[in-house]
Length: 370
Figure 1: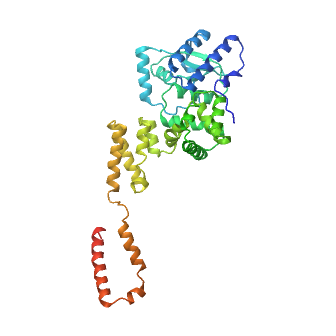
Figure 2: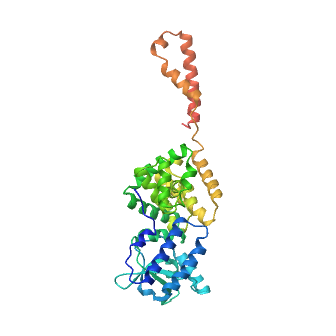
Figure 3: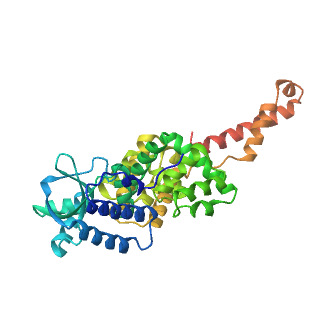
């Protein structure tokens, strides 16, 4: 299934004037650069912003007239991040304009600049400097590209936003995506074509389709990988780093959203599970929360976090030893010792066996602390 380029989603918009047409084209170029994750992204974005400003002019918009995008990817915006942005605005002023789209009701919807807008409200500003652009056809994906290329989304928000878009584009469920992505990437890796897949990120949709066909990726698999590539994402990285975010326990998701826990730390802490520690789920959750608090309070690095996790696992698993082949062999021999064999043995042998077994039972009781 061919997926259109982000820029194409703007091409059909009804333009009332030549000026609006130029604005739409420039905004589409912004989205194209973000989708390709150009190395000079920020420089080119600034140049395009200036062009947008020259075409439409920056305008002061009443903050009370600005609505958030209900489908925006950022689900986490902490008071700390808003206060930090407010301090920067107070110190340096508003350096870059926010991007708004005009709605039919005369109000504006925020496309880019959520933190700046919230920071301005904290400072008590009545207006904010903005550039108004035409409404994109697919505001959800447009906002997602904006955030992926410009804002610092936490990994959980990013994962949820990406997979929300992919499920919409492919009609696949999260479980189906998980299975399909794992299968196709394993095959590509087995064939030694992982590098070829990565090279498709920054090419056109047509070349992406051709490249995937050459890798033997067709039908639903192709639709899935195209959906990720269109967002400028490496499918292998998505599987390794983003998808696991969706399956984190709730306490770790809360720590990411409410306390700023990093993704790499969360993935490491997730191994402190009931299965991983060989304890009950409730106890594992308590252990994990305590470890998470230590990581955050002491600002531990990822290597330090892994050392902490290793120590915790050693504590809970120290009594869990590997299965002894020698003991296993003895158990099997005893099982094979039939009543007929015992009846055929001499009285002296049976007495010797009984004494030996009694001695071993005493030793076994000591080991088991019985």
